Length: 627
Image (cartoon, rainbow, N blue to C red; front, side):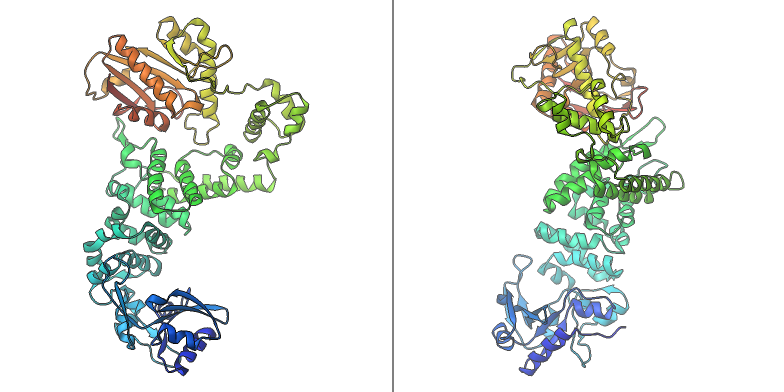
């Protein structure tokens, strides 16, 4: 095993303390890393000198008080900060982290006996034999993590040591001694008393270890303790040829497959956490998880808040989780680069590659596609392709000169950028100006929505309804994770959908009363006609059933009070018509609709294939509620 090479500043510090009559050693992690031929992150010095005595020894040096109460002082020697700590014995840990009392000692063995693991309980000085009273060097040779003394006592002193044991196993590729592992299982509930910030810092280091896969698999129960939403993933069979492992093992393998960046590894740890709640089996028994990226992002948002991550890291992780399963075609790379930005796009590719590596690549391997996407992105960036408004050949001043004013200028620029990044229009001033007359901008929601009226539609309302349909479908088309490319203008829903319902007296709208030219805030078709696919659903609420079809709310109002108001008015109308039960459906993955219905008390009754001939819109979640 490698001998220890002491930096000059460390040699000088030990020498100065010894010349003053005190014992002094390099101790802890720096000794461990040196013996493993790893570069120590920092060097700590243990000494028989007390803080006041340290101050006298280093009177001519810059001193940084870092914990004198517990015997620690930081000294800057030759520009190198060295943490010097007095030999000490710690007594009582009533808060599960800090000692209730510290007693200074002159015995090195007593100081080393308070440390967590044998591999961290060694001390060394130039020209002397290694001080190793607990067999740390032998445990390094055997690649073993073992507590100093009673492991239950060690973990009771500071529960974070359990996670540290797993971190060392992950980073160093060591095994955990059976007695230490048993104590971790016994004491794991103590992690609930450790601050979120300390757990997060340790978890990040653990996840970036080379041996993270075996740690995640061997100690799944501990990770379920830390993140309860992981528990349902353990042993959850996916029942699909695309996967070889259950949700948790797939997750663990995906973590290990992505590069060791804390954000990317946290992303992979949480990317499928919503799968168990989204699972359903088709008629052929094959499992589906429609909408799981959105559900995973929802669950992850709560987990990351609890972890006290910086907001920028949280946003990065949630974006990557939300889009990790989205389809990206080579011709769409410019659009995705524009929406996400260069760094986030390449992070997303790394996430997709890791996700793919943890699947059944013999059945479906997307690695060649992702390589092509990476090449296309690099080509576009090398050619300075248009990705943002600053790259657009047409500027706001050009539109002002052409007579456009106010909000219309900004909306036109946004639309022209969309046209350019999706290849609908060349990025030249002349081409963009020529494109403007042919543009139809999705109408914004009316601003006078306080006095909205719910009523049956009339023939004069068809323009307002069609304008709403246009706004909904065009806004959907501009969403990066749009799973329904067929839901674009002129596809579904369309004007003839509204005309047919109007002729039957089944079309209703939420009207803001702003007059011609404004879209309806929301529309719905109410009747007793249940889709054929509903017959196979195990409904639990009997009664006079009415169905809500093609419920549309303006994109500006989705998830807001007007969406809830539209649903409430529908329930009132069904009661007026003599109905007692409402059934409806939402495309699997349409999280705003799912949140709206479940938030209003609708029961999820199953997932069905409505037989729509629209790509990406095969599966629908169905709901029921007594009204």
